[in-house]
Length: 74
Image (cartoon, rainbow, N blue to C red):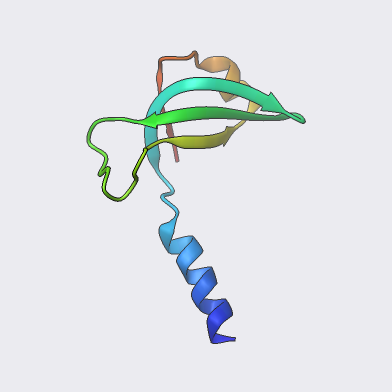
């Protein structure tokens, strides 16, 4: 039981609910829309090596942004 609680805590503690990055790719997979982001200046690269990542977005958000723009998920 303690191990399960620790794993749940680790997953939620390591998630950054608010992150920004530059959109370097956009794609749709099975009706789900994603941006691939690179980290923007001001992020701590020692905590996020390689920076960026994939972010799931709504269809409207997907259509509102183009590659090269900055996007922040909340």
